[in-house]
Length: 316
Image (cartoon, rainbow, N blue to C red):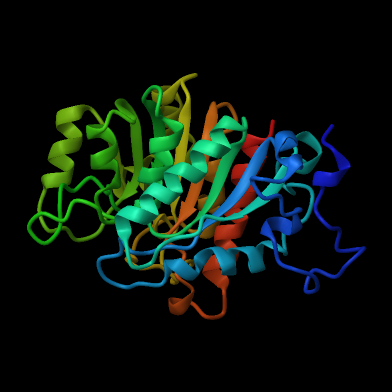
């Protein structure tokens, strides 16, 4: 059983619209807090979108994700998992970005997550654009490459943008493979779709052994079959989960920078996460929630719900 200190504030004690918004109404525990040694899973915000190449806004994602996450209760209605009873969970706050310096922010993110890893805490991140995943992986996979299950409508495997810019939200996993942070033979990307510039990213995936499951195959095979293959690919290895909200069809998640039609619905969005219950998850992220493009907060509510589902498969 978890420590009572790390339980969320109950809606029966304080209405969910009241109080300071933390991820899922958990206590805020800073890295320098003595309580940090007792945290098992840390929820972290990375309010940063300097890797965005078109529609900015994910820098505002963590704040709205926190607000919408106050709707989460203590128990998963489908699986029965009570994550806050199993693991000590806390909101570790935000990494402080430098919005004027992309390289400096990546360094700050890596340093923050190195401290999280040293403390023995598994991180669950709310971003932020998808470049966020690269500096996180630089910390978590510093000692050895890890596996990855990646939900997205884009591969994020391009080499560069605008004749040589190598760090954007379209390049993080190309860099992660090149830097030895990911074992490409144990990486699976699910939901890939949309118009493309060319085949460069898919050619790279084929060359290094990344398994790409396009949306047509996802719909034809169904969630259970696709997720069984994904879990077989990573096996029992240390695995990072990266979830771009644009994996979901924009009818259900319009608040994102690069929406693509034809994606999963909101139920399938949580089904794929529930299938990860046997995966050895060392960390996870939910990225690309962009509040300026969905001011009623529906996308952030779905994102917070997906984060809760991730927590439910990480905690046990």
